Length: 403
Image 1 (cartoon, rainbow, N blue to C red):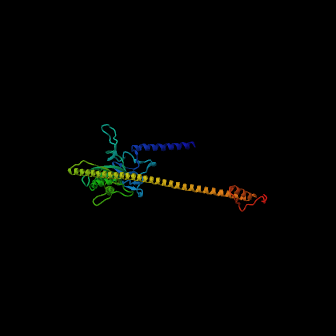
Image 2: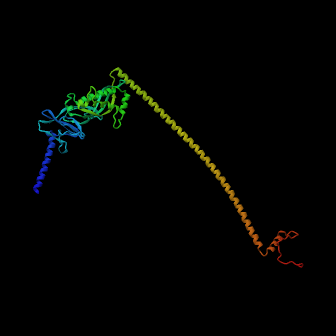
Image 3: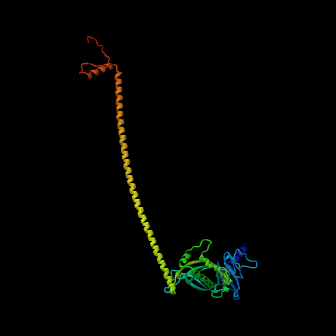
């Protein structure tokens, strides 16, 4: 058991040491080499290219021809692709000094912050800086800025144009070995420059401004982009850049432009004419905006006046309505008061009459009613010579001739 554990531990240590050795040897391109994602390399044997290797997701490169294929294209049975050791991006290179990694001098443009020669510090603004270096790979897909001066619009305005191109390698063998000078990217920039100058020459500066602001819709290319994508296709008398240079354009973006100084009287007149027209357009636009502002101010003033008048009118209507309601309420109160007083008088009269009736009935029901009537009659007519007695009077004491 212990012996087995020791053997396993030793095996693990040996594998780890071997991997580490491969890793370190690949840094120096000895026996092994490293191919980062998105790059293609060439292996030379006795200064002659022997095979190509690429590490590109979704693509594979033919080791003998250098042609790049999509993974949708099956690898032929007679083709053996290099193996990525343990998925680390490390490949078998070969026995030195016979097998070496191909290197070449590469020229390209790069967006970077230039160094101020006076201070030795980087500037804050980016600029296009030409670069050159000895490199040992080629990017499968990369973006490069292209700046072209000497362009001239339809009306004769001189421009310096700046665009950004996305380049995709189609065949590494063609890019490296079929274009000796000035190099595949420089040759491709020359093709792009020619198309750009032709495109600018057929446009006015106003049309160029419109093209710069245009945003292509999904799945479609702008008219500006299509002018460059024609380079990918062969036409009568012209081979495609893929065939000639081993790389094609997969994207083009309009970055910007600047107006150059006039090189002749015609260009100077064109520039002055352009700026004069822009000043005229600016003056017209300013007058239009001022007119709109004046209209908006007048409309605001009119709206405020109408609102004030409406409020005054509504206030007057409210006051008149309040006065009318008050008068109506007073009238209704007076009527109700009169009705209440009349009702009270009527009720009092009815009550008094009722009481009188009750008293009269009570007197009539009294057994001494006749005497009471006679007594009242005597009281009311005590000064009369004749006694008037009510017909209902009945003497309570019998009268005799002797009384």
